[in-house]
Each structure stands twice: as C-alpha cells, then as structure tokens.
Image (cartoon, rainbow, N blue to C red; front, top):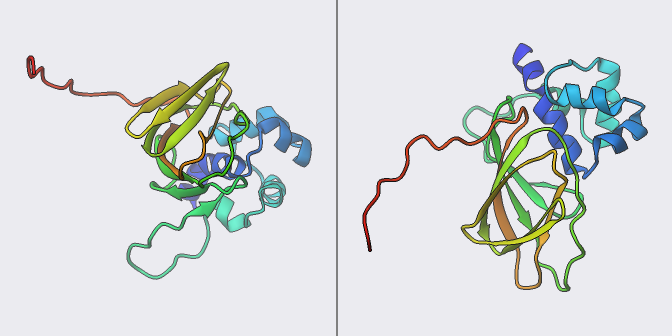
Length: 197
C-alpha cells in the first residue's frame, strides 16, 4: 500500500492530463484548490479518500486506478494497453508511474484539414519529447515549432505548451519523458569525436 501511495501523485497528473484539464479547471469542478491539487500531483500531500472520490469522478476513472490498487491480473508480463485521451490521442504508458522520470508514447490520428493552434496547458515538471513519425506541431509559449521524425524538444512544463498533428498526411507518433519534480535528462558520456567525414 505504501508503494501505491508513493506513486499516486504521477497517476493523478496523468489522469488529469488525459482529460485535457488544467489544475484551475479541476479545482472549479471539484472544489479542491489548484495549489492543493499541485501538491498532491508532486507528492507533497496525500489525498484523503473524499478527495480521491471527487477526482475519480472528475477524471472518469475508477478509484482503484487512481490509488493503484486495481486487482493484479494473471502472472507474467502484460502488454501495455493504449488509452484514448479526449482528443482521440492514444497514450501508451512505457513505464510504471512510481515517481521520477517516466515515459509514454503518444499517437495523434491523421487529420483531413489544417489544425487549429494547439490548446496549451502548464504544470510543474520538465518534459522531453522525440518525434518518431509524422509532423508534430509544438506550441510552446509564443513559439510555434514543427518537429519531424528524429527531432526532439525539451522544456519546463510551467511554460504553456500543447501539441497537434501539423497537417494532413498521416498520423504522428512521438515519445515523451516527463519528470514531475523537474527532473531532466542528463547526458552522461559525450559522443567521441570521429574527426572530419
């Protein structure tokens, strides 16, 4: 049970982001102060059962899912199941949400018309993303970037940010690594200099 409590903050944040909701919007819907929600997501405050029930209803998930107490399935590894976000985005968790850096893969469906500028959100943490396929529109503060396969971006998630498929031509697949406490990726060994090519 202690492990479930330690992992609750990241699960709360993921559940909120899947709904595309800001801390302010969740606060209005549940009557819980956004600062309290932020402390819970960052592991600095443990939610009460009453608060968890309100959040489970707001996020349309089970209490077991938020608390990490869902019954275990059959023994052995289970394939990750893509989950659909509100904007038809599929989210495939690649790590268990136990705090610290965690990763997931996102797939944005193909679109038939030019998209509107992505809706932006901001929250505590630090994010690194890498496009695997397609063209990803990253709206980062006042900047608009279009990233293609192999390109990456990293940013403090307190900066307003949002993503969208950059235009007709197929789906977009990208990886995200997120540090809820502001953890950043740290290259450990520089690549050797191979000289002129």
